[in-house]
Length: 411
Image (cartoon, rainbow, N blue to C red; front, side, top):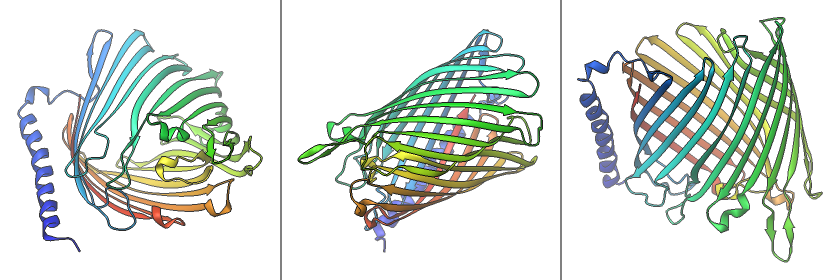
């Protein structure tokens, strides 16, 4: 049972959130000269700048995601974002992007106070639909603390990517994508979670039928993990290769049905003979169905092999992620958008070291968000999210209720 002090803090936090949101709205509403600006950016010659800002007040009843005595807290997140596009020529442009996340917690003082993401890319398109893009990004973030006496674990992720789509004739498309991810933790004690990940995708789409444009795709992933130290023994090698073959369909973005349906076979080969190979169903689904002018369904599904992160309370050598969910978006009134979503994540952890370390996590995430567009450049968002992780390892069981109230600005 919560104490009267906690109930008073809860009421004070919601008053603070409401006051923050309404103050921003009252300040910005009189600026009528900006009301006609569409949320697509400001253009000047060949330049386009797209600034965004979000101020969000959140309340969590289990800020540390603990299984036992839960601690609640309010925190404010300020998210500035700015994108700069420069057109070298028609359908040929360079983009620079920055996103920041700045946090202020009411009570917890061991969370990271800021994250940063920077990205640069170059994109070339043709009138027939062919496309080439390449770029790089760097971000610094952290793994959250899971108790009041822990600290956040900071790390950096560097990414390099290139992708091309070649439209060959009326009905055939060839695609090639390559990506390299590198993750490095700041603290030496967390170096075991460092890795390099290289991924290559090759695909072909045959669009003789627009109802079901046939997709064939091959994916290769090389995962180089930091070796796991063992007392009195050689370090434990956890590197592996994953091969996946998919079939399905890929629809164009502008259609009533868009996105990709990929279902096939995947297998992972580990360099260490102590780790059993994995093989089985592979899946990568991301579909958007525009049921009506006011209703949209988003269907997402995944099944793949991922490395464990000890800093995130993972165990073992790797885990098989099987996840799926649906997002329903309703826009019954022009200025109000309601989003309902549910996702399920099934994580099957495999050790390769000791059978006792094998475990399964079953995470359920349900959310409701309501967005009210006051003007085309300003909106208020009210949201609620419920998370429940049911694990074979009792120390990582948790439930969390999260409420948010925010103001989003964009030009």
